[in-house]
Length: 190
Ligand code: FNR
Image (cartoon, rainbow, N blue to C red; front, side, top):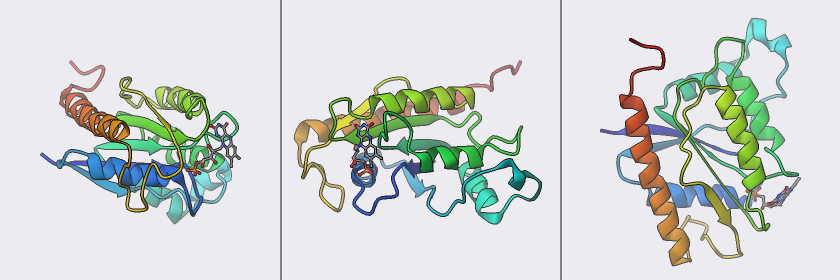
């Protein structure tokens, strides 16, 4: 069975190391996961003024998430938290109230940083948001990737064997997690 995974890269930077990480994850994932980027780039800053007449960029974002079996967040940490562009996209995807695209959507969180804490704090904040949004999250393994120059090639090849093996295992575990969550009856069902 093929599963569609939408992935959000939390960085808008041209040279984003997290975009390279996303390429590596896709390259190392089991063959029955199919990836589509959920772009966060062209969204205005959200306000509830938009709720009565949701713009096409907002509905398109929500429709693309709705069409996925699962979502994966590949994100840097900015100032010890979720990058603003990513949080803005999450806000767009969860409004108007009562129409939250992440509800019951299995998710995984991973990120890379040259810093000692390896995006751990941003990931904790993101996990708190996803919990509120009722997204079943893969709790383990956690994906704290320490970036060193040259770790990924432009094409997303991993130059360090241990990291490559870890990322392969992460995607295998995410696949197992997706299969399990989607086979469970919805919470509250008889
Ligand atoms: C950073 N960086 C950073 N790193 C970290 O580990 N913890 C942090 O809190 C921050 N804070 C931070 C704020 C801002 C505004 C920037 C631009 C950067 C460094 C960051 O990890 C580094 O720039 C990565 O390259 C960002 O990932 P992308 O954007 O290259 O994918």
